[in-house]
Image 1 (cartoon, rainbow, N blue to C red):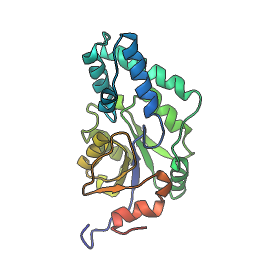
Image 2: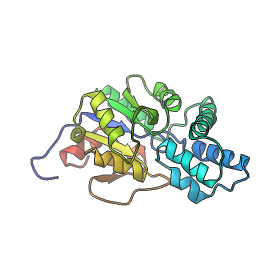
Image 3: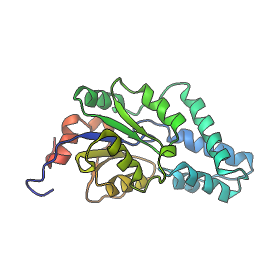
Length: 224
């Protein structure tokens, strides 16, 4: 970042599956179960192709493998299976609840930006520390999903903040691409489909290593 280009952090925008909550296994298991009902072998490669993608993309992949349901039927089936898993509790990843609470205490708004549809997104958002999420952008709320910038731009608009003054937190290639296309710096946490290194991508081994100071430091061009 050039000298004199310091920016103040206005908001943090969060991916959900695999970033804040350990729900990627729920989605992958649900996909596998649907495929198995049709006598299909849902491979690791198939599963990885869906990570971070919009739900209609996942539905299309399942259809291409031989699932003879409509896209809407596949999506509803996936949602029902994952929501049922969440009834047992939200599987927050290490450090997630702590950093969300610290951002809320610092009066820095957060938004949830996920390709999961509203039944799952709202359930997770409602379980977060009080005062955390000021906006939720779910996959069924935007005309174009990740890797298009629309989801992150929609979240910035809902929060009334400038995209260039936001930091996104992601774990997938499509999500990182989406956030950067929206003009945001990205904190990348470990995921199933890890994005390759590049400008504007700040890698951490865990959310346990993310602090309010480190998020601010990204936009100020400093390390904290």
